[in-house]
Image (spheres, rainbow, N blue to C red):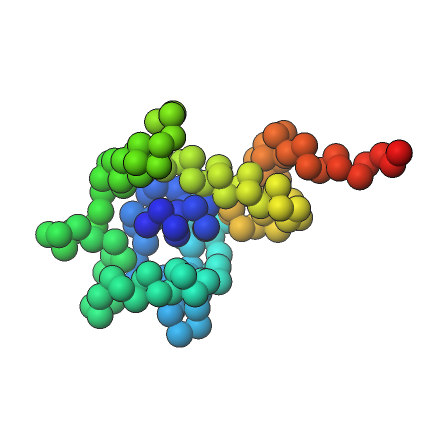
Length: 147
């Protein structure tokens, strides 16, 4: 869950609402159904994601992430999973699922990905939302001036 949320910049509700009919393991894609007025779209799945999804079992109907009772994992349960993972990782600040979405944006900016590509990846309807991720990117200034 954490891998998909981070890689695809999913909101908590987008992740918990993910259904198997949005996942195509053969084509190696996932249809990201965005919320909050964002733009939905198809994303490629990497090998690590495909292998992890295949481990979820042969019954690929309904919700992708279900609890031991077969019900969809709730947003509050995923929030607890992320908080626990943060503590176990030794992070000194409490973390929540939306931080995974922001971390994706910052990572893509810091690796030099085009801002318009990031806008589409994250589903932002307006590029101004994507520009927020450039504020902490000092790497972008490297090479601006020569000695």
